[in-house]
Length: 305
Image (cartoon, rainbow, N blue to C red; front, top):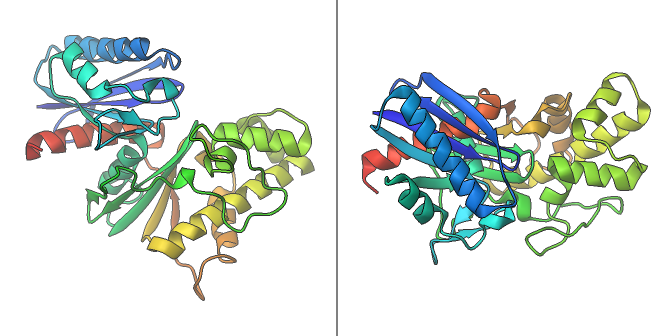
Protein backbone atom coordinates (compact mmCIF):
# COMPACT_ATOMS: atom_id res chain seq x y z
CA UNK A 1 0.00 0.00 0.00
CA UNK A 2 1.29 3.46 -0.91
CA UNK A 3 1.47 6.32 1.57
CA UNK A 4 0.14 9.70 0.44
CA UNK A 5 1.02 12.76 2.51
CA UNK A 6 -0.01 16.38 2.12
CA UNK A 7 1.44 19.47 3.78
CA UNK A 8 -1.08 22.31 3.80
CA UNK A 9 1.10 25.37 4.29
CA UNK A 10 0.34 29.05 4.34
CA UNK A 11 1.88 29.62 0.91
CA UNK A 12 2.12 26.19 -0.70
CA UNK A 13 0.37 22.83 -0.58
CA UNK A 14 2.58 19.84 -1.28
CA UNK A 15 1.83 16.16 -1.89
CA UNK A 16 4.28 13.31 -1.57
CA UNK A 17 3.85 9.60 -2.23
CA UNK A 18 6.07 7.12 -0.43
CA UNK A 19 6.31 3.38 -0.85
CA UNK A 20 6.48 1.13 2.21
CA UNK A 21 10.27 1.53 2.31
CA UNK A 22 9.97 5.31 2.50
CA UNK A 23 11.19 5.96 -1.03
CA UNK A 24 9.65 8.95 -2.79
CA UNK A 25 7.60 8.01 -5.85
CA UNK A 26 6.02 11.38 -6.55
CA UNK A 27 6.15 14.92 -5.26
CA UNK A 28 4.17 17.94 -6.45
CA UNK A 29 3.23 21.31 -4.98
CA UNK A 30 0.72 24.05 -5.72
CA UNK A 31 0.20 27.52 -4.31
CA UNK A 32 -2.22 27.51 -1.37
CA UNK A 33 -5.41 29.55 -1.99
CA UNK A 34 -5.20 30.60 1.64
CA UNK A 35 -8.17 32.99 1.70
CA UNK A 36 -10.79 30.50 0.48
CA UNK A 37 -11.79 27.38 2.39
CA UNK A 38 -13.61 25.86 -0.60
CA UNK A 39 -10.60 26.48 -2.83
CA UNK A 40 -8.31 24.78 -0.29
CA UNK A 41 -10.54 21.68 -0.26
CA UNK A 42 -10.65 21.66 -4.07
CA UNK A 43 -6.87 22.09 -4.31
CA UNK A 44 -6.16 19.16 -1.98
CA UNK A 45 -8.73 17.00 -3.76
CA UNK A 46 -7.14 17.72 -7.13
CA UNK A 47 -3.63 16.95 -5.84
CA UNK A 48 -4.76 13.56 -4.51
CA UNK A 49 -6.74 12.62 -7.63
CA UNK A 50 -3.90 13.66 -9.95
CA UNK A 51 -1.30 11.71 -7.96
CA UNK A 52 -3.47 8.60 -7.85
CA UNK A 53 -4.03 8.85 -11.58
CA UNK A 54 -0.35 9.38 -12.34
CA UNK A 55 0.60 6.30 -10.30
CA UNK A 56 -2.46 4.34 -11.47
CA UNK A 57 -3.45 3.37 -7.93
CA UNK A 58 -6.38 3.56 -5.54
CA UNK A 59 -4.59 1.61 -2.81
CA UNK A 60 -3.15 4.22 -0.48
CA UNK A 61 -3.40 5.86 2.92
CA UNK A 62 -3.68 9.62 3.27
CA UNK A 63 -2.33 11.88 6.01
CA UNK A 64 -2.51 15.67 5.94
CA UNK A 65 -0.53 18.17 7.99
CA UNK A 66 -2.43 21.37 8.71
CA UNK A 67 -1.50 24.73 10.29
CA UNK A 68 -3.83 24.15 13.22
CA UNK A 69 -5.53 21.29 15.05
CA UNK A 70 -8.77 19.34 15.16
CA UNK A 71 -10.76 20.22 18.27
CA UNK A 72 -11.47 17.10 20.35
CA UNK A 73 -14.68 18.80 21.50
CA UNK A 74 -16.20 19.64 18.11
CA UNK A 75 -14.18 17.89 15.40
CA UNK A 76 -13.73 21.28 13.74
CA UNK A 77 -10.46 23.08 13.01
CA UNK A 78 -9.06 25.41 15.67
CA UNK A 79 -5.86 27.41 16.19
CA UNK A 80 -5.12 27.75 12.46
CA UNK A 81 -3.08 30.69 11.21
CA UNK A 82 -4.75 30.04 7.84
CA UNK A 83 -7.83 31.48 9.49
CA UNK A 84 -10.40 30.44 6.88
CA UNK A 85 -9.98 26.88 8.20
CA UNK A 86 -11.14 27.76 11.72
CA UNK A 87 -14.52 26.28 12.62
CA UNK A 88 -14.69 24.12 9.49
CA UNK A 89 -15.02 20.33 9.23
CA UNK A 90 -11.97 19.87 7.05
CA UNK A 91 -11.63 16.16 7.77
CA UNK A 92 -15.28 15.46 6.98
CA UNK A 93 -15.31 17.60 3.86
CA UNK A 94 -12.16 15.97 2.48
CA UNK A 95 -13.40 12.46 3.29
CA UNK A 96 -16.62 13.22 1.41
CA UNK A 97 -14.75 14.75 -1.55
CA UNK A 98 -12.25 11.86 -1.76
CA UNK A 99 -14.47 8.97 -0.62
CA UNK A 100 -11.77 7.65 1.71
CA UNK A 101 -10.39 7.98 5.22
CA UNK A 102 -8.31 11.09 5.84
CA UNK A 103 -6.02 11.59 8.86
CA UNK A 104 -5.31 15.17 9.95
CA UNK A 105 -2.50 16.33 12.24
CA UNK A 106 -0.78 19.56 13.14
CA UNK A 107 2.00 20.37 10.67
CA UNK A 108 4.61 20.71 13.42
CA UNK A 109 3.61 17.27 14.72
CA UNK A 110 4.22 15.93 11.22
CA UNK A 111 7.65 17.58 11.12
CA UNK A 112 8.48 16.09 14.52
CA UNK A 113 7.41 12.59 13.49
CA UNK A 114 9.34 12.76 10.23
CA UNK A 115 12.57 13.95 11.85
CA UNK A 116 12.25 11.48 14.74
CA UNK A 117 11.66 8.61 12.30
CA UNK A 118 14.56 9.05 9.88
CA UNK A 119 15.83 12.58 10.23
CA UNK A 120 17.77 14.81 12.61
CA UNK A 121 15.97 13.36 15.64
CA UNK A 122 16.40 9.68 14.78
CA UNK A 123 17.76 7.70 17.72
CA UNK A 124 16.87 10.30 20.37
CA UNK A 125 14.44 9.40 23.15
CA UNK A 126 12.61 12.74 23.15
CA UNK A 127 12.43 15.14 20.21
CA UNK A 128 11.04 18.67 20.24
CA UNK A 129 10.64 19.93 16.69
CA UNK A 130 9.78 23.48 15.72
CA UNK A 131 8.50 25.05 12.52
CA UNK A 132 9.57 28.66 12.13
CA UNK A 133 8.13 29.75 8.82
CA UNK A 134 4.81 31.40 7.99
CA UNK A 135 3.78 30.42 11.51
CA UNK A 136 5.57 29.14 14.57
CA UNK A 137 4.55 25.76 15.99
CA UNK A 138 6.07 22.79 17.74
CA UNK A 139 5.58 19.07 18.25
CA UNK A 140 6.86 16.35 20.58
CA UNK A 141 7.88 12.77 19.85
CA UNK A 142 8.66 10.47 22.78
CA UNK A 143 10.09 6.99 22.12
CA UNK A 144 9.05 7.26 18.48
CA UNK A 145 5.44 8.22 19.24
CA UNK A 146 3.77 11.60 18.86
CA UNK A 147 2.90 13.11 22.22
CA UNK A 148 -0.69 14.30 22.40
CA UNK A 149 -3.00 15.62 25.09
CA UNK A 150 -6.69 16.10 25.78
CA UNK A 151 -6.76 19.57 24.20
CA UNK A 152 -4.78 18.66 21.04
CA UNK A 153 -2.25 21.43 21.73
CA UNK A 154 0.91 19.54 22.77
CA UNK A 155 3.91 21.56 21.62
CA UNK A 156 1.96 24.76 20.87
CA UNK A 157 5.03 26.73 21.76
CA UNK A 158 4.33 29.65 19.43
CA UNK A 159 1.38 30.92 21.45
CA UNK A 160 3.23 31.58 24.65
CA UNK A 161 4.81 34.95 25.46
CA UNK A 162 8.52 35.56 25.05
CA UNK A 163 10.22 34.94 28.43
CA UNK A 164 12.78 37.36 29.89
CA UNK A 165 11.28 40.10 27.71
CA UNK A 166 13.19 43.34 27.06
CA UNK A 167 11.74 46.77 26.36
CA UNK A 168 12.71 46.41 22.68
CA UNK A 169 10.71 43.20 22.25
CA UNK A 170 7.43 43.99 20.54
CA UNK A 171 3.99 42.96 21.77
CA UNK A 172 2.16 42.85 18.47
CA UNK A 173 -1.38 41.46 18.34
CA UNK A 174 -1.64 37.81 17.33
CA UNK A 175 -4.47 36.22 15.35
CA UNK A 176 -5.15 34.05 18.41
CA UNK A 177 -6.41 37.12 20.28
CA UNK A 178 -3.40 37.62 22.55
CA UNK A 179 -0.47 40.02 22.25
CA UNK A 180 3.23 39.29 22.13
CA UNK A 181 3.06 35.58 21.24
CA UNK A 182 6.31 34.00 20.09
CA UNK A 183 4.78 33.67 16.64
CA UNK A 184 4.60 37.47 16.34
CA UNK A 185 8.37 37.66 16.90
CA UNK A 186 9.91 34.44 15.61
CA UNK A 187 7.91 33.48 12.50
CA UNK A 188 9.04 34.83 9.13
CA UNK A 189 6.32 37.53 9.06
CA UNK A 190 6.93 38.22 12.76
CA UNK A 191 10.64 38.75 12.26
CA UNK A 192 9.93 41.03 9.31
CA UNK A 193 7.47 43.17 11.28
CA UNK A 194 9.72 43.39 14.35
CA UNK A 195 12.73 44.43 12.24
CA UNK A 196 10.56 47.03 10.49
CA UNK A 197 9.71 48.57 13.84
CA UNK A 198 13.36 48.53 14.91
CA UNK A 199 14.95 49.82 11.70
CA UNK A 200 12.24 51.32 9.50
CA UNK A 201 13.20 48.89 6.73
CA UNK A 202 10.64 46.41 5.41
CA UNK A 203 12.79 43.40 4.48
CA UNK A 204 12.18 39.64 4.54
CA UNK A 205 14.30 37.26 6.60
CA UNK A 206 16.08 36.25 3.39
CA UNK A 207 16.85 39.88 2.53
CA UNK A 208 18.20 40.55 6.03
CA UNK A 209 20.32 37.44 5.64
CA UNK A 210 21.71 38.64 2.34
CA UNK A 211 22.72 41.94 3.88
CA UNK A 212 24.25 40.23 6.90
CA UNK A 213 26.41 37.94 4.75
CA UNK A 214 27.81 41.08 3.10
CA UNK A 215 28.80 42.42 6.51
CA UNK A 216 26.00 45.00 6.91
CA UNK A 217 26.14 46.04 10.59
CA UNK A 218 22.42 46.80 10.89
CA UNK A 219 21.48 43.41 9.43
CA UNK A 220 23.89 41.64 11.76
CA UNK A 221 22.21 43.37 14.71
CA UNK A 222 18.75 42.33 13.47
CA UNK A 223 19.86 38.70 13.26
CA UNK A 224 21.56 38.83 16.65
CA UNK A 225 18.39 40.16 18.31
CA UNK A 226 16.42 37.40 16.61
CA UNK A 227 18.86 34.73 17.82
CA UNK A 228 18.58 35.95 21.42
CA UNK A 229 14.77 35.87 21.28
CA UNK A 230 14.84 32.35 19.87
CA UNK A 231 17.38 31.31 22.52
CA UNK A 232 15.10 32.60 25.29
CA UNK A 233 12.08 30.82 23.84
CA UNK A 234 13.88 27.49 23.48
CA UNK A 235 15.51 27.84 26.91
CA UNK A 236 12.02 27.86 28.42
CA UNK A 237 11.29 24.56 26.64
CA UNK A 238 14.53 23.03 27.94
CA UNK A 239 13.72 24.18 31.47
CA UNK A 240 10.26 22.64 31.28
CA UNK A 241 10.80 19.36 29.41
CA UNK A 242 14.56 18.93 28.83
CA UNK A 243 14.32 17.30 25.37
CA UNK A 244 17.16 15.13 24.15
CA UNK A 245 17.29 17.10 20.88
CA UNK A 246 15.63 20.16 19.36
CA UNK A 247 15.08 20.19 15.59
CA UNK A 248 14.25 23.30 13.56
CA UNK A 249 12.35 23.38 10.28
CA UNK A 250 10.68 26.04 8.15
CA UNK A 251 12.19 28.81 6.08
CA UNK A 252 13.59 30.85 8.98
CA UNK A 253 15.53 27.80 10.21
CA UNK A 254 17.96 28.48 7.34
CA UNK A 255 19.29 31.71 8.87
CA UNK A 256 23.12 31.68 8.96
CA UNK A 257 24.59 31.18 12.38
CA UNK A 258 21.39 30.02 14.03
CA UNK A 259 22.86 26.64 15.09
CA UNK A 260 25.91 28.17 16.70
CA UNK A 261 24.54 31.44 18.10
CA UNK A 262 21.33 30.16 19.71
CA UNK A 263 23.07 27.41 21.76
CA UNK A 264 25.73 29.93 22.74
CA UNK A 265 23.03 32.31 24.02
CA UNK A 266 20.52 29.98 25.66
CA UNK A 267 22.95 29.08 28.43
CA UNK A 268 22.12 32.46 30.01
CA UNK A 269 18.55 31.26 30.61
CA UNK A 270 18.65 27.47 31.10
CA UNK A 271 18.57 26.42 34.76
CA UNK A 272 21.65 24.21 34.58
CA UNK A 273 25.40 24.50 34.96
CA UNK A 274 25.83 23.16 31.40
CA UNK A 275 23.51 22.76 28.43
CA UNK A 276 24.26 19.75 26.22
CA UNK A 277 21.00 19.79 24.24
CA UNK A 278 21.78 19.52 20.50
CA UNK A 279 20.09 22.04 18.20
CA UNK A 280 19.80 20.58 14.71
CA UNK A 281 18.41 21.55 11.35
CA UNK A 282 15.79 19.23 9.85
CA UNK A 283 17.34 16.66 7.53
CA UNK A 284 14.41 16.58 5.13
CA UNK A 285 14.08 20.36 4.83
CA UNK A 286 10.77 21.60 3.49
CA UNK A 287 9.77 17.99 2.72
CA UNK A 288 9.85 16.96 6.37
CA UNK A 289 6.28 17.92 7.20
CA UNK A 290 4.80 16.24 4.17
CA UNK A 291 6.81 13.06 4.83
CA UNK A 292 5.57 13.03 8.42
CA UNK A 293 1.98 13.36 7.21
CA UNK A 294 2.47 10.30 5.01
CA UNK A 295 3.99 8.31 7.89
CA UNK A 296 1.16 9.32 10.21
CA UNK A 297 -1.59 8.42 7.77
CA UNK A 298 -0.10 4.96 7.31
CA UNK A 299 0.41 4.43 11.05
CA UNK A 300 -3.16 5.37 11.95
CA UNK A 301 -4.49 3.14 9.19
CA UNK A 302 -2.48 0.20 10.50
CA UNK A 303 -3.61 0.76 14.08
CA UNK A 304 -7.26 1.10 13.10
CA UNK A 305 -7.69 4.11 15.39
